[in-house]
Image 1 (cartoon, rainbow, N blue to C red):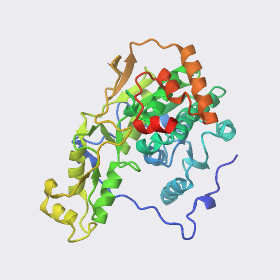
Image 2: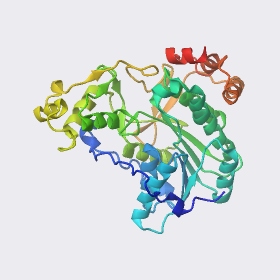
Image 3: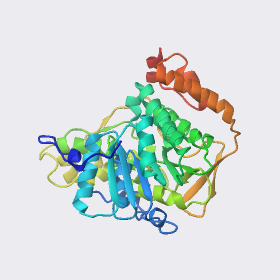
Image 4: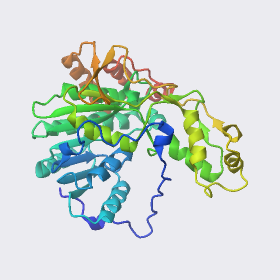
Length: 399
């Protein structure tokens, strides 16, 4: 398989252009300077390397790809299942009008083992950033097979390809929702965290980076809240008591790049500060919305003009199945150790890990997933992740 011809990536006539979200200085909300580079120069490890990014059109993958398009890598391979996302990334690349790095675009499903094998064999990537995933919590509660197939089996397909190649680094994007998961997303990511060391390779350093909520990511609270403000409708908030760990997409990309320089540990946790109330984010967004984007005369516009959050009409929906009031960064038996990079911690665990039992249970799970068999699905997930608390939606789905 070859890379997509550039002509195929140009927007088609009549195809709607994606709407760019407003530029927001997230450091004002996070109340910290933006983290752009930590430890050593985080670009040195990538210099002149062949780098592959899965999910390159997504919220984290696209920021990482654009960073590497500045000439840091020798060859950049960007993979995404969405042609729309690839076209957006190509437009960004074309505007740079540069010859280096060489960038190849692939409209590829990470579940297609043959395509992956051809790409890896032809281009021999030295560094792989794995950002491809299905991530929307409520929707996946009613579609667990899709989540497990992409997030677990897709990761396994990539790791299987690595067994035959000299890849230096494989960096997986994980999430704090993998800790004591209450969602299919969370349990699928936790299984992937456990899968990585189980498929340890002598030639490849395998890393998983556990991130919090990425501000402004597609389908998340920020774009939905801004869209409601622009429509003059009451923004929806699940629970006013909810808190989350936040970081910007730029910070996520920086941590992914900097993880290459961490000298120890396979599961890493970056510094993200204290959890922040979702209501603080809502108030920040109300003040950040640019003038003229809100219909004049609406209650939303009046609230913005007053500058008072209590005047903003809000609709509280309650937590949806799979969502937690507060996220956690570690399990009860996990503890953090410092690394050579102060802002990135090594996650250590006291529990024992039986690779044979894990492999048996994983095999059962993947058999259920490929056959789309509901019977025994939750039980098998719970064997792999005993802390998993299935939601009522998931329980209804499997009955």
